[in-house]
Image 1 (tube, one colour):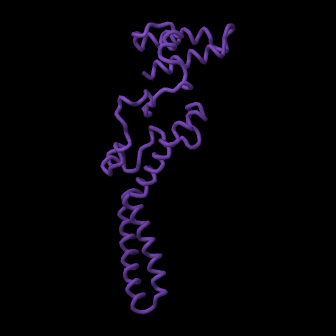
Image 2 (cartoon, rainbow, N blue to C red; image 1 turned 60 degrees about the vertical axis):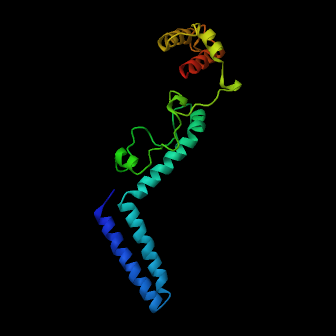
Image 3 (cartoon, rainbow, N blue to C red; image 1 turned 120 degrees about the vertical axis):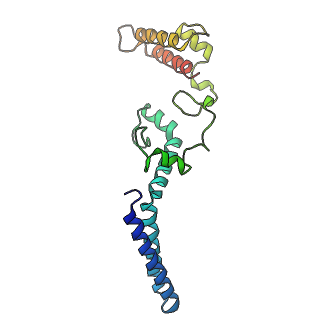
Length: 189
């Protein structure tokens, strides 16, 4: 019921009653102020829902939580999403993406320079020793030159991974993990 005139009209009616009861409460009985406060809260909730602001705020909160949990969720679930993974890319925000951007929720304040992002769109961070092989080690593992193009790297990765996959007869799980880590390092550059 996004931007529903009915809800906004009901909010106006409840707001009017809240004001009337507040005036009567001040003049006659202070207990009527409690009823006026309830009517005011109802009017606010109807208005925020009827104008779509409630859904926008809820979506913004879910989006922020998903961005915070992106790293933890991917490690825990292997990148497949799962409980707490946040909204999917095909999910449409309330009122459409244009309205979302017009409301100032495009995320521009939180976004870094696109050149500082990895291929999945997450903020890139400086590699540490526990993040896997260095770029030079990754090139050696895949058997490609440092100036190789992405297509060459992908082809070398596919050939190596077929040869060392643990499900094959001559497979080696440790070598498979090294090849996979090398490809992840080189595809993220």
